[in-house]
Image (cartoon, rainbow, N blue to C red; front, side, top):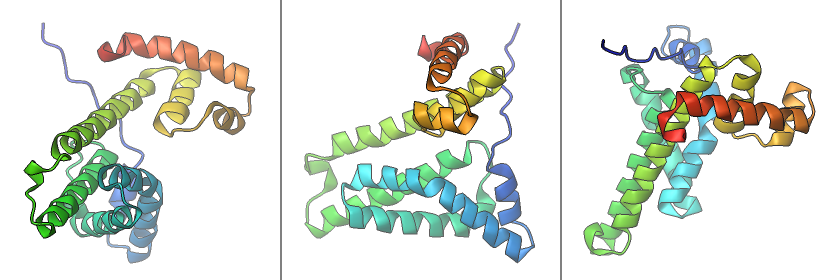
Length: 192
């Protein structure tokens, strides 16, 4: 008996991507703005983790979203949109680091950074893949559990923010989160 590949739930970004690549220019601009606002904080975080420079991270964010704007029609949807954007950001950050190393006339391979840099990129990509796995598994949970996991793990809100957003106490959120995590362990082999 062969296992079927998991069905990927539609991304929250899918409608925005469709509008951004559509013919209506006003709707496309609004959709692009929403995609930028949604993904900019994490792109900035990825860029800063890799470059360790505010100025370079800001440049990477700008380069990333210019490239995304130019290449959005090539996004195939085989991975989450966020994963694609973060990979673009990581590539721009690495190109910036390579350029800086070349300006110093030092091959990047001979500095102390490459192993840790490659490891950081791999860690960020692995973390994003796991986050996508959690989002897909959370979508399979029943509503209270899926909401709590989505807000806490995927959106990165703290317990108080989740409680305020759902209009319940923090204790209720803690209980729901505990139960949801137990359910996720059954759905995610690497979480056990």
